Image (cartoon, rainbow, N blue to C red; front, side, top):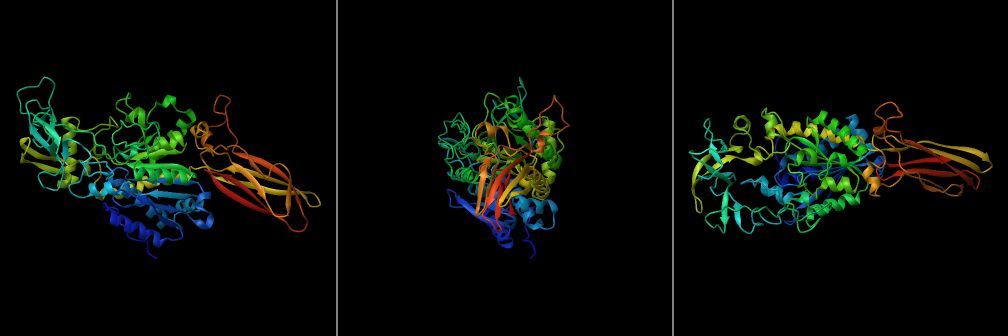
Length: 557
């Protein structure tokens, strides 16, 4: 049958996304299984798609690769990428060599929209610039102060330009639509304060208080250094149904060997750690992250950087409770967070910092503004217009629509972003460890007495333990070899044995040197002495690794 048609130059609401997921699962029942991980506060399903070829083995006995998207309400481009990955894997199986090989050898778990309640509120007018998960309506989680609202009724939440001689903003002399910073010591002009558009609860007539939201930065709700001080961290770790469902899913799928979580801030690939410098990381783990990150940069165009070193403005205040740090620092999974889309880069601005809260110089603002007018139009910028605010008096509303400029790309640019990031997902997945029995042979020693020799190898890039952190935390299970059979006795060596871990080729980046990293074995042999009861007998030799899969070979005597 023809593959379902999906527009990748559009942002899909929950109903449309659900339709596409169900249609794909129905069109490819031999490869795809769609399940709900639970319900949100507003009763929506948290969907997960499992994709593999079951004819080549069960999903639980293959290395797994995990992708999630839209944990934050306003990050709509992320769901597009996740949906594209699902579509690409299913429609290209059997025709694309890489896709076919991966689905035969591995399993993909894709959670395309973690936060459907928040996404639905942010996707429709007035387009809330918001991370929350719908426990509260936007703004209603704040006891007092400014609550974002579309007060002028134009269908957008933008900014309020409030005249104030104490203000830090002024109109650009070159273009009064642009607001630029007032210089130190500058006096004698017309100045303004800028606030999010909205009304002020319990306003004292002097100070416009803006509380930090409580609802619901789900990416601060995971059980790694969880802190209630973090914006939207929740009442406790995993207090929210969405993050709890994610954590349960990851723990229930211990075969996950790689992970990408999608966000939208700056066109970068973030690697661990979120809380400590590179010097505090395992050198081997850091090396493998840099090597994989270099592949990501080549395929996506996004640089790979340390979350702490280059994406944390104030090193005294590292961020806690993120998914990526939980899955790497506690579970030892090789985890990235890809931040899709960078407006300034698209506008031709030189990238000199990876984390900034905008705006920058007047020249840069003007350059970005011109790009937005040309490529996004009124969806990205609203002209300033007078408004009589019931508390602030005569003001203007307007300015950049953050969600459709800095946070998400124009729809016509989506498919290329999807394609490039899906390419890195597939290559990252392909780096997983992969256990195979290279040799299983028997040698007859006497009547009904045989020596069975097996050689097990790791054919993957990563080691079977994935990371040093996994070993340090005691979560890396060793490779297991076993032999079973009816009417046979195992006389020498245990029928089941743990043989430790097998290295991947990632540690052999140059020819051997006594001054370089010393190589660990990628293969190990093992032998048993087997006695049969006479006649034809059969044994099954099994090599099993939690992260690298399972391989069985049958041997007849």
